[in-house]
Length: 179
Image 1 (cartoon, rainbow, N blue to C red):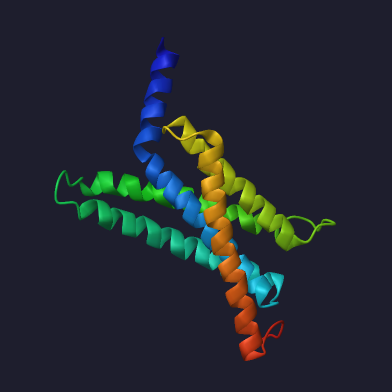
Image 2 (cartoon, rainbow, N blue to C red):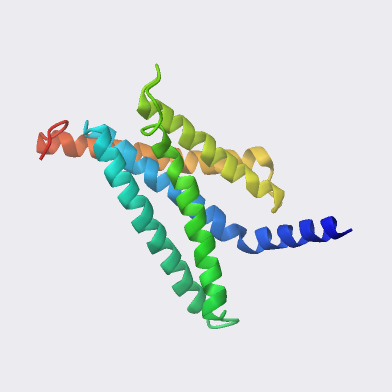
């Protein structure tokens, strides 16, 4: 009986913070993989990917959490306490950091036969689909539809970032060169 109650409490907590977790996870994956894509598009080094990837991961995660707290505190009806708003911000931060770390794994793991960029893209794609699909457990969306929806949005952002990085390298003539 106690186990059922704790599962009910866990489900209630997930439902309460699911929007923040999904929002943070989606933005973490998309933002981090977009940075990876832009750097690869510009033909810059793997160390540049790791430096900018981790800098962005933490700076953007904190920014997202702070923005969520301020957004929650800006409600005119049912304004939450600072403590409750901070819980929402923390959920956003955790979703962002945990999921946003995944595209960087390809550059931290030992070398494989497949390119690191392809591995990063595959990891990001799988993670986008799984986070999106997980919404089906707590919403009226189907597993497949929710997963594909999030995957397509993330793929679009990565395509834009790669293209902008490639174009920037062409315009500046700096692709693959250290400053």
